[in-house]
Length: 78
Image 1 (cartoon, rainbow, N blue to C red):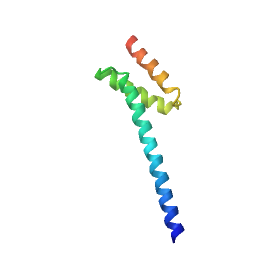
Image 2: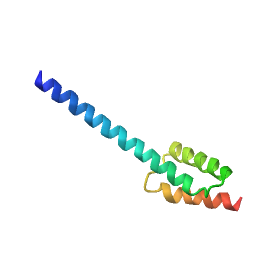
Image 3: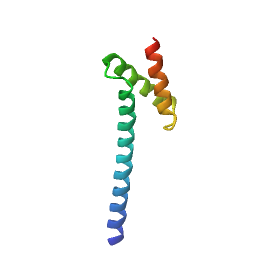
Image 4: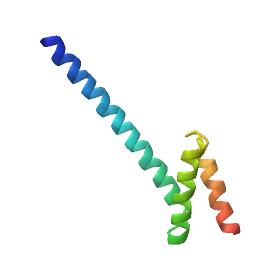
């Protein structure tokens, strides 16, 4: 019974830490996209759409800031 309790609490702790990591990563990506919007509501919606596009396209985390910056520059030109 002791091993069962240890396994369950360890699994729950690992799941919680994974869940927290994923949530923080999502918050950071969203915050990055919104920071590039410069407070403009239309650009904010545009940047959130580009963030969703980046997620579906499979853009890696290390490439995401440059990709979003390029999207923000494209919005300025349009």
